[in-house]
Length: 231
Image 1 (cartoon, rainbow, N blue to C red):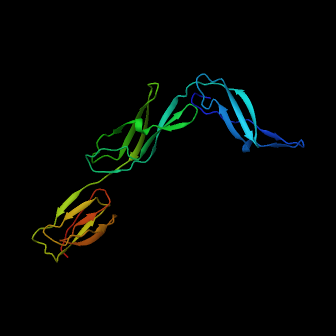
Image 2 (spheres, rainbow, N blue to C red; image 1 turned 60 degrees about the horizontal axis):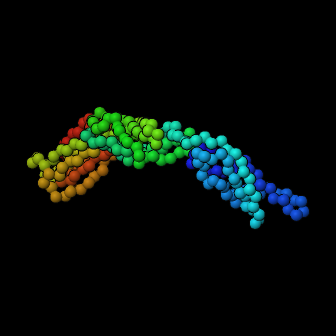
Image 3 (cartoon, rainbow, N blue to C red; image 1 turned 90 degrees about the horizontal axis):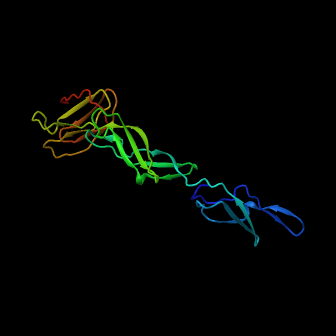
């Protein structure tokens, strides 16, 4: 056992002996109690008490005291809450957890005591992945780190103004693109009929919209070609 462990009844067997010399193994039905309840640095033996059918029996066994348990390593679990970023934004540890594993193979969540860093620290237009690194300092003063890399998508914003005099409120225009496009807002200019229209992505897609509408195109990637024509 390690310091802080709870004693168990592993490998102990309890047999009930009845008046007619009948025997029955009742290990799984007894109620166990242990002294001490928690292993300390001074513990060398444990007294186990089994109670069944109103009868109790005590058994003391020696233990190997392995001392205080220590953390072997930490690792990061979970997935980041946000993987879509605008250039200039900073990554976040939201959604990620840090788990420490002791030398007795038990684990503990140490997320609240972890210090996070990210590479890159700030998202730019060329960023495709982010490495999140968690650093945790143990009670012994040992520093441990773990890193998890996740893919990110960059949201490109484009604004096109259709308020030119060459369009009337009854005019239509057509947008054409040859790849999945970015989040893009086409301003409605002086129009009053403000509406949202969702466009799917893909090759050789097109849609029609009115000058007075606000169109939001998703999801995200580079726009290779946009052409506006009158209907």
